Length: 113
Picture 1 (cartoon, rainbow, N blue to C red):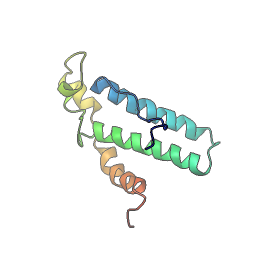
Picture 2 (picture 1 turned 60 degrees about the vertical axis):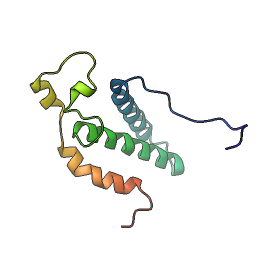
Picture 3 (picture 1 turned 30 degrees about the vertical axis):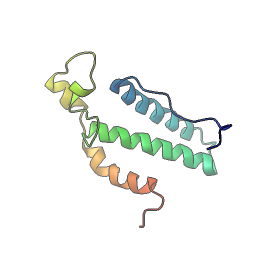
Picture 4 (picture 1 turned 90 degrees about the vertical axis):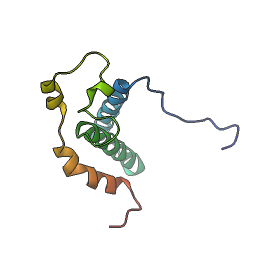
């Protein structure tokens, strides 16, 4: 990269809760952009890939796949300790099992079919 070019990076996240909220906010943003139905070509591709990326990150979190896990709130819950019922209520591996693989394949353009 040449010295006269700007460096591009996302804002720093201060804690795990903000990371989870970032994923939710970006999923919502991409969803709203896609619903506008004004997207075409590369702009549509960018929006659908952003949507799928953030959706996959969240189903991995709520499905306890890797990294931050909904089932281990001591790692991310700063406010208070969650009850066993609350922890059980936010976990859902069904979406992870159904969509994680297909989304990952879709996002990996060079993946052979």
